[in-house]
Image 1 (cartoon, one colour):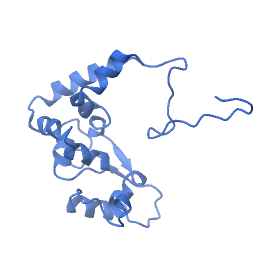
Image 2 (cartoon, helix red, strand yellow):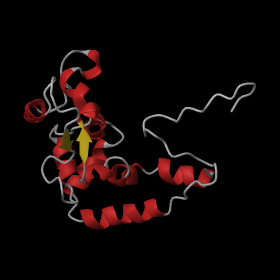
Image 3 (cartoon, one colour):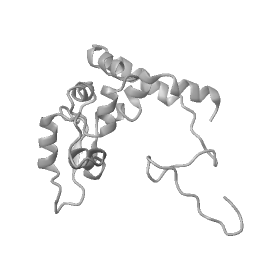
Amino acid sequence: MSRRLITRIVLNYSYLVTINQHGGHIVGVARYSLFKDGIYNFNNTGGPDPSMSPWLLAELKDKCPRISLIFDNTYPLDVKTPSLVDNSYFQEIKKGNGVLQIDQQIALDELTKNIVDDIVNDPDFYTKFGEAMVKLGRVEVLIDGQGEVRKSCRVVNKKPFIFGGFN
């Protein structure tokens, strides 16, 4: 990746919050396996995430009980308007209604909470979201061995071991 590209992405938290992982959560669902610890064993405490609202905690426990016959239930990431592109996702995470821990953290973190506040209070959300999407479209895609498509976005793919050498 070029230094110019890294600087453009890393230094602008506003764009990251608006469209990166978080803005992408405006429409979509999460699988139970991704948020079960936030309900039943946050940071190995044996209890729920303390930043999660009591309403959401009860809702998630009802929809995704600890023991279930359904292997991997899903729940909308935007609890208010799950099929609309709007700023309600950001309004909800400010209330403690972030389904994923990372969602809740952007409303609490010193680097991003003011951006979330700005998005919630901005009457021109659609313009800003569009600008952020255009900017994302300018990111240069890595091809021909310059990068990799991850099997899981949370970890780098394992490299196969080649006997007699390193890969």
